[in-house]
Image 1: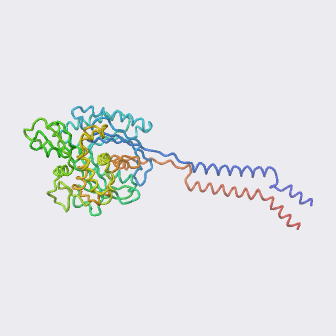
Image 2: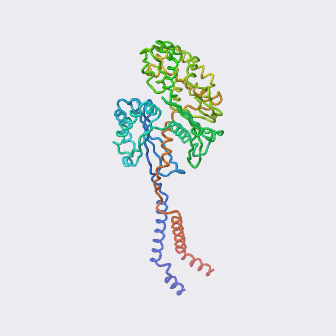
Image 3: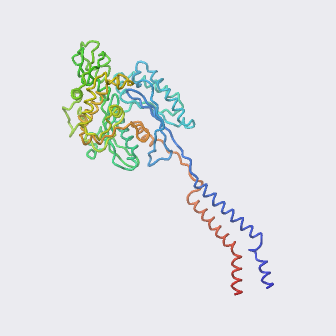
Length: 498
């Protein structure tokens, strides 16, 4: 009995020092395991890039700020619009006689951009200005004036700390294609590989149609073909831009058809009955789209009066399209190849603003009902229209009958939408907080040329993390076994006594 007591007292597992050491090792192992797990799984701070695009259109300029994570999906940054600013005044092409004012007009929105983009990101944030149909027309008419406007714009934009990448005129094909990218990107159709949506864009000076057709491989009219690779998928896109067929220039074309003989009075079915205004021939024909048609010996002014007749207005508008020749298997108008429209379409810019004002954005309504509503609207007296919409500027208010009729005529007669395919058009202003238009698609495409930053990584690689957790777990298991070893002796002793 004395010998057993001596062995018990001499056992190293029963000494206070040993117990303290085992306890300390166990606590350290537990603390280390918890610390490693917390640090390894701590949420990583996301890095963001920013980009600024100025859309210099024919009627106005708008600034858009985009943000996307530095880590990219399949070489395509996930871009979102975070801010927009409408520049006060007309488009930059209107400043041909005072180019410096074109640059000056942009400064207020640029100051807003300085506030919206984090200061430490200014120098690395790319800044682009893309000009569309208004500057295309000015460049056609007076290339020297166009160059001076761009020079003034560039001087103004270089005063800011952003990484200015230049100002240029986008081709009509680019404008249409990037608009298509925007619509499909915002609907997540590109990332998920879904059926794509066509894009219909209507500006003041041009209009674009872009869509993927299963019957078009780009061989019949290569100039109308654009290929994109986004999110690992290839897209062969049909796209065409019609210069001079934007809403404002189309109105000039329609009026030019009615003033070929230089009359003093024009009775216009596209304006409300009771509307009358004295207009200058010089102003009407002050555009490359119609300047060559100005009648000889015309008086200085003409009296523009409205008669408000939808059917007659549509007949006038049809005359600005040429359907008499087509060297391809099929055409839209003016001899331009176009496959049959296919799939759903998103219609934005002036398409949306005009049809929204007219309460005609619900395309589930039969096309015949849409025409009936527009017929009634155009037949409404001008005095009633002004009373109902007294807050709308007269210039815009007077043109809605024409604009609505033009949109329906362009879609059904020009692009060959039927009653069935028209119902697949969706008039859109924004998608998921981003404005529909070419700028987001442009920015999205440019992110493929901006190197991705190295993402923040966990403190340990995955293999190292697993190894440390395993070692700590084994160590805790050993400590646990050692801590209960005295119980083994006690149990063994009790069994021996029995």
